Length: 122
Length: 122
DNA sequence: GTAAACGTTGACGCCTGTGTCAAGGTCAAG
DNA sequence: CTTGACCTTGACACAGGCGTCAACGTTTAC
Image (cartoon, rainbow over all chains, first blue to last red; front, side, top):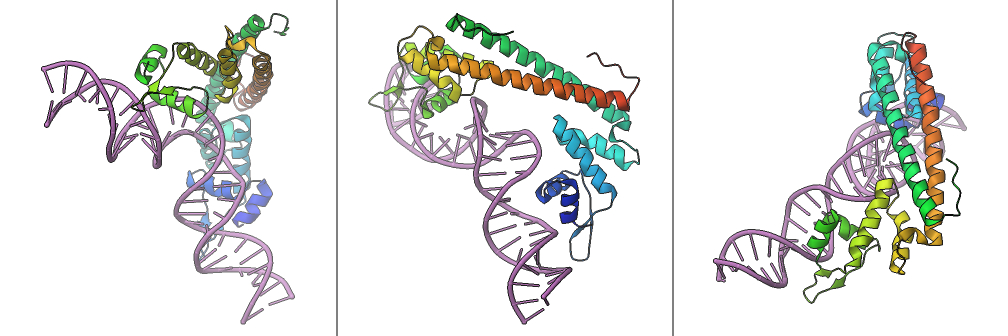
């Protein structure tokens, strides 16, 4: 299928699809006219990328999942590298949460000091 | 004092000081040679900005605090506008935390599915 | 044949605070 | 007078994923 159809079926803009390809996540055969020609499997592949981006992964972090799918696995997360990324991501998220909680406490403290009457649930 | 001294005393690069000025947060008289000439109070002012940036405020959000200090208040947070920003920031942070917690749960669920043996404290 | 729809690559913009380089003015010390 | 430290403005670069426009080739339908 051509890029327009893939875009429509995945709900992803053609711009994004080309961007993914540019970063080596997506590959396409080329017709004699230069048009990209995608396989059926690419629909799932793009969906995997989108799902991960949605969760907060960077494009680079989706690479192991894509590679995993390409190797024929039923799920992008079925490979060791993917699991590692999952675990790393969990650690990162936990760290971000800690930072935010610290910030929240800091802001709440400042607010309490500036405005003793202001209640802050915490 | 000149910009170099202010930079040294606040631990902020001259680049940043000029940037703050460019955005109307910092003002300086100019000597006959065109050099910026800062007042003693600007040290505290810059410190206030840095403290807020550190906590995660954007430069724009520090404006009410700066204005508040300029009006002669002992603290940048002593004004109604500043308190509003504090409260808005708290709400934003809480929202971000919620997003991160949701993401964490999502990632943990995916990980558990991909790797049943992997334990995830939650 | 021609217009419309779709494809191609390339490149700029965004957002935010800051690093960094350029090309030049100023001033104190030797 | 020269060196070097310090100042000035201006402008490019980054990170990340994508919108969007340009300029141009292809296919499709009439």
